[in-house]
Length: 168
Image (cartoon, rainbow, N blue to C red; front, side, top):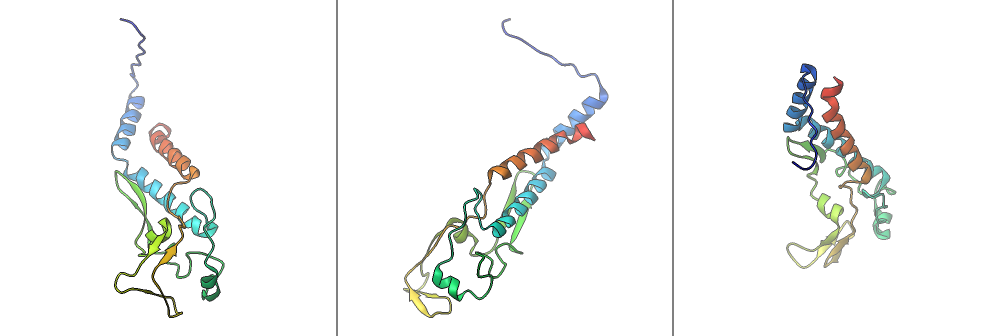
């Protein structure tokens, strides 16, 4: 037979128990997914403070006319009501996935950017100005997503989780 073969026979009950424990943890990674979701939640919330996307690029500035009339948090974007980073943003995990979820109705358009057009009628009324427009362009201000640091932290959390049976 050509090639090479390397065999390890494990005859130590403590090592076998640790390997079984590690395999069990990998087949039901719910605790790992919960840790990842919690980390991503914290990372996502931090972007509202740094006002940057996952790559560290600053969000586009507010439109000057809106910035003039904004009642509070004038220097911050996506923070007027606190909804975007507050109770409508939360971690979610299962045995198969880890996520950060927002149920704020405006989250998608702000995260991806896009154009808002009237659903009914021909025009949109802008804020308290009474001005009517045919459409409004919302620039992308991505707050959800993975940075390089997030990816590395997920790897580190996973390695820690896999290594737990060997360090307990």
